[in-house]
Length: 445
Image (cartoon, rainbow, N blue to C red; front, side, top):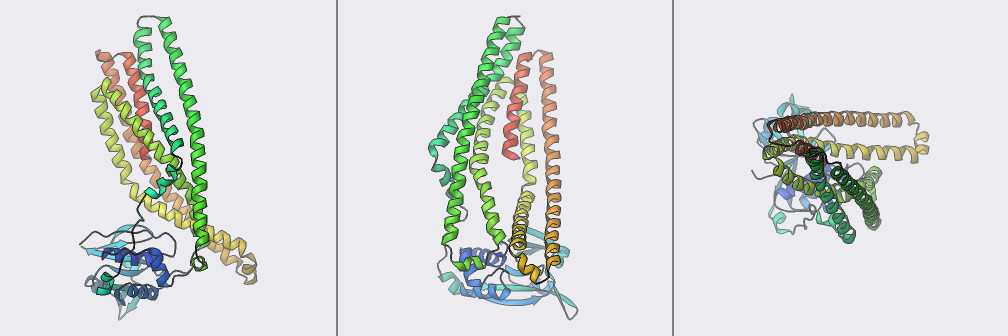
């Protein structure tokens, strides 16, 4: 079976059109989500199975809405759309060894056991048999004859256009990063010379000179950091305004019908999340580049001092990276959940404030308050899951990282005792290890 391409639903009510988009892509056609929204009759309550069926037939599918038992589902042609948890739509794209492979547009590609699958899908009982609702889709010749839309959804170059506008400031920033790295690179050699030359020869004047040089380097590094912070502030502020202005301009050009199908919380949450885009462009991206540069430079310096210590560092870094990668999928799923809960919370607060008169007229204050409290309970449960996941990841990472540091400290101390390394070189290696640990943390955590 060919690989199944997953799409994430951008808004709370987009599960139906997104499922249809994934199936269309499975059969070789990229159709924009907006087009599927328009032809499926989506509104603030989402879309019905009938709406998905009509939209599918408009783009060339032959559809059939059916109730199936688990045995009948095993014989059905996949992929197909399932009515999930009585209020959601997902795509079933594979069944293998009693495992059911689901593309959930609100989460990710997930494999369920048969017991788990039953809880989510089976919703009715007929002739003492539990059944679930499904929509089968079969492409017709008309589907293959139509033109697909251009797929630019995965292009990240669009985001970097914002950085390109301020390329002169970015160049200045990189110059500052380079100067800062060079200044940091000199420090371990100065530290070694203080111990190996100044202390061993009891040359106080030499120590004065080195300490003055270190002081000047510290002043230089602080100056570079101050300048870099000012440049970064200018870039981030301008990009923040540019992204938000472009979003508002695009929002204002949309037809009134668009706002009939959107929850207020979705739009507000998107405006809040643009800060994360700004942080990615001006913070995460530049920090990773700086970290990679430092990592490469100080790795060569560590090899110069001791190859064995470098190999231990490299091995522990690979283990550390693999441990963090193990949690990426679950962190991504929690991130999707965070957006969903935040959007619902925003909508609930807006409805409470703006619709207070209507709420009081209908005497439903208590129901609305309970609804808000249930949301807060859901957010609390989400925070617990997020904290637990973070603690598991942190515990493993801490064990690997500190174990590496203890082992390297032992080997360096042993090398000094055996006469293979000077005391100054030992202090320089410890400084280098500190400089190497920081980039790894910035890139992976």
